View 1: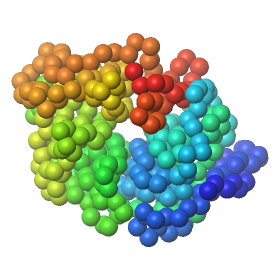
View 2 (view 1 turned 60 degrees about the vertical axis):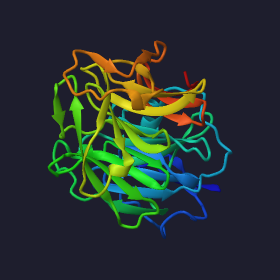
View 3 (view 1 turned 90 degrees about the horizontal axis):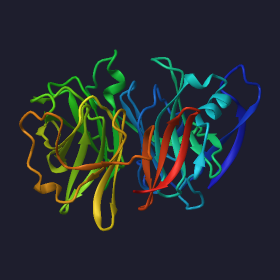
View 4 (view 1 turned 120 degrees about the vertical axis):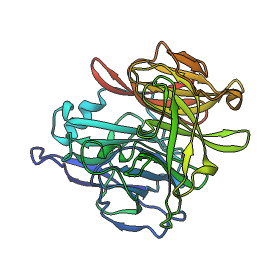
Length: 362
């Protein structure tokens, strides 16, 4: 159930009032959640778990928060098209659109509602915020003042400084566990963490080594940029993408605490490129990944027989391994998430600003 309260806008320059959603819920899945202020120091990747639980990555604080939103009824849908999202956020927050950063987008599978991870301002002093979208594209701030939540700390994050926001570069939930990618201060800085949910205090932290075909060497210092859980013949894996753009299979069974895991590079999709977001889906009975990129558009990567692809262990001039098609009519996509089995919601940068749109998976 959702109820709404009024409070003053965050900016002292804005005298108007904004609507704040306050979720009420029966927190059956949370590990003794408590109502209170959610102590986010920053906000980065977000994802949903069961019954409307929203997992929020806080790179600066090196924590994962689980918010019991109570938004678990199918009474909402993602907007087909909502334009000027950055301008709308700026108006609510009393700043210029250039001072609004949308860090991530996630669709609540329980309600089909779209959530945004937002920073007001840039740099270490940016204010972390969460917003939910209505069917017509209206934006409502999710209150962090008295929310049901739990949290867990990530041990040995990369030290504070220029790389601290890479302490958490990605977060996903699958089959009772939260997976977190990012940098640590360990020997293998590239790290994947496996965290049982409800949180019990246990975090299995594994260092990841990959062969980067474009660089012609094994690497352990570059973080996963985006990833997604993947089922390969009944075995749980992580499909991870790195800058320049190797795709790597990582067995979940090897993600034990203290392990050093060597991933299997199954594709090189072109250098001078940064993967931004990725989902997997089935179309016509065949598995695919849909991946947004900084310089190479949106790729539809064929995953059929991925287990038969030979590991890339030698330098690659440009591309090798899994094949892909570029979706030519999808440009400027910065974030995406699935909405059900047949659609995806995109955050798209245009000449007029940011928009959210819903598409059928290609």
